[in-house]
Image 1 (cartoon, one colour):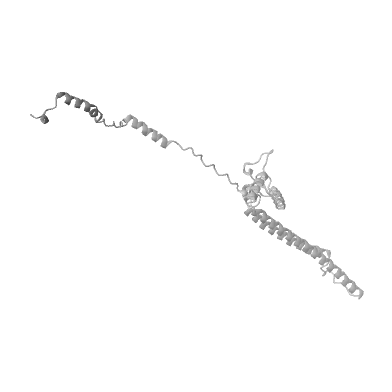
Image 2 (tube, helix red, strand yellow):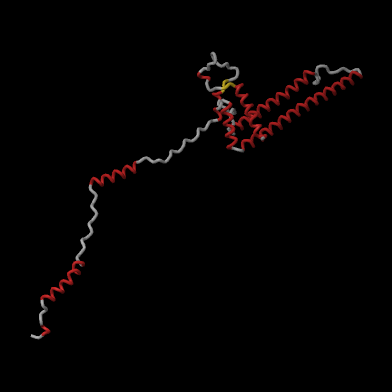
Length: 243
């Protein structure tokens, strides 16, 4: 045999295998990653219970505050409550004082007209009386007689005429007060337009015994006291208008 076909000796083969051994160990397949363990039934139940507790936990959002109680001005019968009410109304609605100023202006204008009309009537009566006296003097001078009993210048007739005028003014005043009370009621001013069942008619005696009040009269006001409170409230409104 030739040298090219000689079989390698055993020592060379072992040496070659020894050099390849570390590489083979490095190229060994790494074990696959272990999967995460599935939750046990007990653990899953705990998670579900926690989620349910969070979902059913009451919200800590503060409850909305209750709206303030609105007081009907038509039910107020005490001065302190009425004063608080009107001050709130004036602070909330600036137009109230403007309307009150207009009513005060109209009232003063009418009162001035009535007063001037009464003065004018008295002056006419005085002039008529003087004219009648001159006429009577002339008739007496020529021997004539005066028309006794037909003159409208007698003290009784003049007084009756003046009383008729005053009654007309009184009726006009009552109509004006009625219209102004209706306007003040619409503006929410207390003591005007008060409910009828809260007012004790004038002249009706209160059935009180030693300071006690009958059950049916509790929460009522008599007409005299109501008028006093109305005048007091009008004075407050007039003062506010002058500020």
